[in-house]
Length: 406
Image (tube, rainbow, N blue to C red; front, side):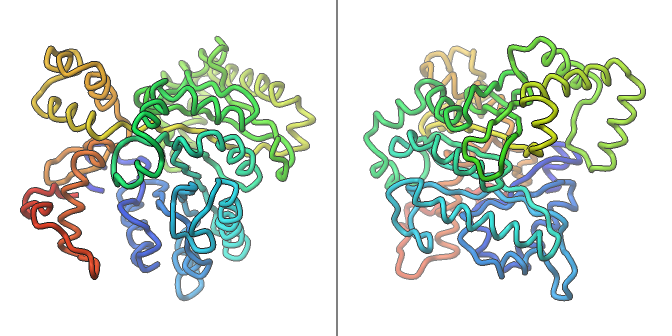
């Protein structure tokens, strides 16, 4: 956390990952979130499969004396039909089979808010494979009614457990899944949303890695066909002009709420031009949503739609070796390595999602962590914390100094 604060600034977003967080005792889980908040990570997000009980959630959010430990909990919860072992859904045949588990998780969040006043933000993650890509529209439609604040879809790549690759399909399947830079997956998300999903005005990292559409649902909570209305259109010159004004005069919004409120008030009072542009944008969006009466009748519910397109481990390993040697994607060595390696280098250089390595005083892109560093670190952990009855090949375990500190 100290390294992230030093390299990425005093405030930011951060995820608690590296395993199923609910396997931690609730008190240890809470302590980790409190450390993250102490170091300026405003909304630390716990990554989970969501397969825990309400009692665990209460122990995490509420102290033994009944007082709230947190006013809000943020979660990234992963559901997809290729996962195995979930209670009540150990083997499923479709994404629809997991809708009850999705609803159960959100019901726990709503109950916690109702009984203890703890708010929540839940991002739904789903790995996209050849066997479930065409089920994305149904997942989006169902999730619209459940209360998720983000729906994130990750086209699978050749990284991690090779047993998953064989189950998902042939080698060509994964390549075709990502060969169009994710256009096919994004089209499936748009089909579930009920319209086009503009993502060009605000871009985090490389567009071949990330696409994000910010918007809101305007309609009945229980309606899977509830209209999704993007906040910004990348075909609107007025929306682009507002974006430019905000970037020029507002800058980051990842700040403590009170600080952000003061910053916005000062901006609107000091630069009336920005205030006028913002009011005009509100008017445009209200009419896109169906007009003032509809917006007043149906309280808009914010929902962000995201695609994170990962990279194949072999490409990342080749690209990272060149980058560690000082090469960039335009150098002769990168060109000689092939177009996919050069593209991977360019994407890694633009990465907005990084892991901190305090021993090296740097951050590394998440795909480098998973494709290059995790295999050695996981082997070291398997030796340090062996599973009963599971042998670890000696050749797979690197010397203790070979695993970078996290």
